Length: 166
Ligand code: FES
Image (cartoon, rainbow, N blue to C red; front, side, top):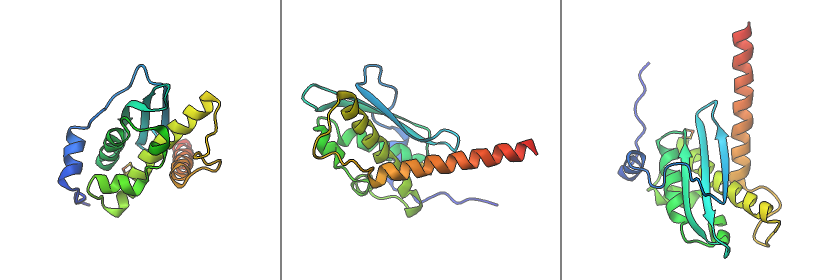
């Protein structure tokens, strides 16, 4: 069966070929993973945050698809020099918009990128021992989606293992 390529726009293809801020950050203040390496959809976000709670730089590693790489790349650009509160308020829809749109089957790639960012910011606050007003106690939609994907990947990998052992 042949698979037709997804209709990505030129901005996504450009970010996929030349992603910005790609790679591990050795001096990161905080990092967070979202997704699961077993199914290939995984992002790691690194943030360098100064003592005024401003994000000085951000980088990412991605093991996902073109949309995953493009949305992660644009997130690292969008949050540079932002207060963590403002970065928290970035929605997955604005990220999808910023890359010029993606096919709807790829929405989850952008959601995963924002999920990783929110996890990193939540972890930062936790490590600092603060719970600012803007940080909800409940997980956000993006964080929940990341969790769901991880659960799904675990179930799939268990099933595959069981099949192999048959
Ligand atoms: Fe899963 Fe893009 S990250 S298809």
